Amino acid sequence: MHDPYSVLVVDDEEPIRRLLVRELVNDRRMVHTAVDAKSARQELRSNQYDIIVLDIRLPDADGLELFTEFKAALPDAEVILITGHGSIDHAVEAMRMGAYDYITKPFALDRLELMLDRAYQRVFLQRENKRLRHSQENERPALPLIGRSGAITHVHYLLSKVAPTNVPVLITGESGVGKDVVARNLHAQSNRADRQLIIKNCAMLQRELVRSELFGHKRGAFTGAAEAKDGLMSLAQKGTLFLDEIGDLPEDVQASLLRVLESKRYRRVGDNEERQADIRFLFATNRNLAEEVANGRFNEALFHRINVFNIHIPPLKERKEDIPLLVEHFLARLCVGHDHCTISASALTQMVDYDWPGNVRELRNVIERSIILSENGAISNQLLPREMAGLEMHGEDPSAEDMTLETMEQNHIRRILNLHGGSRQKAARALGIGRKTLYRKIQKYALLPAHDQRESE
Image (cartoon, rainbow, N blue to C red):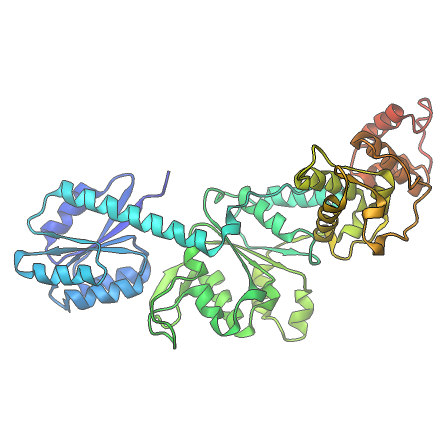
């Protein structure tokens, strides 16, 4: 169910204003009024409207000029004109210029009500089409955050705490660790999950058009601005705006973004009118913003404003116990053209031993490449990239047959136990599972004698 849409009625006749408010307001339509052009401009400065119902004859303005002004200020709103029989020609001319429709006095309320609902359907569809054209990626559902390490468990905890709030979140970590996955999960768990998630990588913004991309612009605001355009702020209204690589935002625009975060309002380029910004902001960076501030490359006030709540994702080399789960996830997701895909124990061991400078993104790419090169979806260590080929095998047989996930789990637990000198407490912590769970798996796989339940510290 959509929020009620908003209508501004601009008419100097008080009986008409009172009648329209009384008869048109309901659970899906809000109606505000203005008595003349001056008060209408004040309303547009304070609020955003979906539809404007405009009397073509006002005491302090020409109807056609006011229509042009309002359409420039709210290009995605529809305008319905109220006219008398003597000024129908003006209304027809306004329709040629982009007005939705006109209605003559005296008018039937049910006809106006139908006209309002149809006009809003057009507004809604046009806005949805804009959002979809802007980023088809936004249709992708939130991917699961894979891992049982202490680090990923902590990220899940932080997500559960901050997602229902409206505070800005700064997601930090190296390239490829999954900052976008965290952002999508934040949006999916938030109170705005049924609204749009707009994503933009600041490094991809054209420097000379950054302000226009973020805030939109009025027609004629700069050379080439032949038409008014809404920016990311408008597209993300009532939803979530995720600005990736925020450290790449030009310094002169950082102050403008700070004002939006503090005042919840913004202006399009070339416009004096302010608009409301009802937006949940998410940010991400692979830079150390504190160092960027110290070196004078990032606005200190903006840093403190976006760093209200920080979620840091460690590199994959610091949470290697997550690698088997990630491998399992990508095998299932990327297995195309085969009944199922498997990986040999020796290949999995090499993956666990590798440091993954490209993090989860690199792991995904290696799995996808290996599946393409494989026969019947079976990945052996011979299919892995050269940089992984010389890693120590920890006693695994390179010629081992492809194994089930259960056998992979058995081998991985054995390896983690060996890495920690047999300490089940440390192994359980590294595996991201409880000690009792580890004890049961040790007994299940006969990794240690069943009666030996002491800790080998």
